[in-house]
Length: 85
Image 1 (tube, one colour):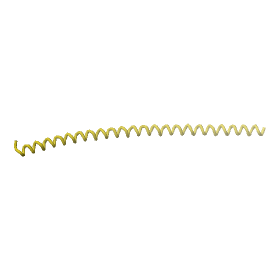
Image 2 (cartoon, rainbow, N blue to C red; image 1 turned 45 degrees about the vertical axis):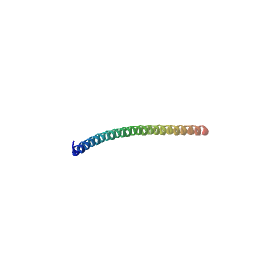
Image 3 (spheres, rainbow, N blue to C red; image 1 turned 90 degrees about the vertical axis):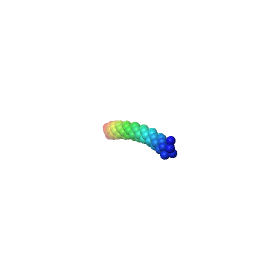
Image 4 (cartoon, rainbow, N blue to C red; image 1 turned 90 degrees about the horizontal axis):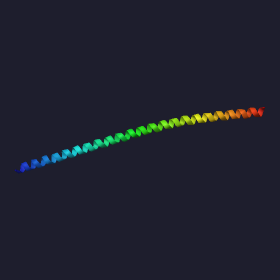
């Protein structure tokens, strides 16, 4: 083999290794992106669930507070009525 044939063979081998290395890198980058998307979707789902729970808890809290105010007002009115009788 001549010197230029040896150089060409070495260059082809290096290019093939570089190409396969790039393919592995691209596959890894795609896998990382899939994982990021999965984590983002999971985070969004959990956030939506948390916000829904917080909204439900607030509605329940407001309802309980309103009921307590009504009960207190009724008790105060009954006490006032009893005191005036």
